[in-house]
Amino acid sequence: MKHYLYKENILKYLEIFFCFALSMLKQALKRTYQLGLLTFSTALLPFTAFSEDPPRLKNITVKGQVRLSPAAKITPKGLDVVLLKFVLNPEGEVTPIGPQGRVKTNSLGNYKFVKVPTDFRAGFQLGTRVEGELYSSKIFFMKAGEKFIEKNIFIPGISSSVEKLETSKVSLVIEPGLGTVTVTEVLLFNNSTPDKIDTSTKLLVQKLPAGIENFRLIGNKSLKSIKHQLKDQLLKIAYIFPTGSTQIIYQYVLPEWFGRLQINREFEHSLEIVEVFTPIDRLQIKSSELFFSGKQTFNETTFLSWKSKISDSNRLNLNIKNVPTTSLQYAVVSVIIMILLFGSVALFYWQRLTKENNSKMINS
Picture 1 (tube, helix red, strand yellow):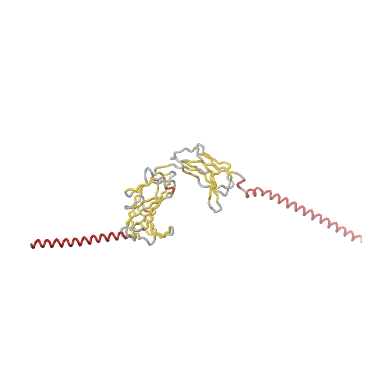
Picture 2 (tube, rainbow, N blue to C red):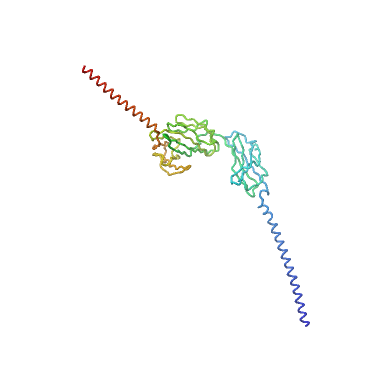
């Protein structure tokens, strides 16, 4: 009996000991978990703050230089440089939100914007105005980890080297009218120099076909300053061509004669860069200098396209048929026929009367 009670007491003590040990183990595991979670959260805190609002972490410095062409006749000192910012509005359009800063250049043309708030979702651009014209850098974006951004602004000079102005493409769009043909010429010029090219002293010359009427320039607002002279088929253009490509469009009318017309166009270059377009099923064009290249659609109108053959020639001869004719031409021809017919009848009776008078004189 005593032995049994002794065993039972031992079992109770063991049960109490295991419960106490299990409780201590649970508390130790809980403390370890909390400590690890706190350590992990502390380690992630800088990254979390950075990802929530990166622009507030630091500012950035934007600097650069206004660089002048050797042909520029201005000083780089004291120019106003503005830092512009562009964002997308709710409609998805690029919208400027105003200048982010304004500084002046030093004697070397250098400028610097300090403590510019970073914004990785916006675009930026630097600009300055010289003699009323705006010059700017390319749009740039801020990147994470950058401390400095360097962007320069180039100010071109003005040159009179017209020979460096290259005609890169010429398109002739020929459309029928009533008794006329309307020709629209689209000329693309390329200025590969770093300076503007002024053709006011040495005019840019284009030789147009004979007999043109109603000549007019077609241009946008940037081409309002273009000046031209047209005399004896020579079109002389005075304009300041910026660096890069410039498109000049002009239009004129040529009269037809009984649905036919011949156009002789002379260029200052070979015909390899010349294309001709006419509306489909409207005109018939033949030329030994052209070959058919397919169809193209402009403004819901399908045009037939011709390209020039490889040649050293600079003359393009076009024979055009099926031009709508006015009734006035036929009226004039009818009047001429009536006059000729009346003249023939009058001549016939005059000759007959003359013969009768001569016969009477001989008989008498």
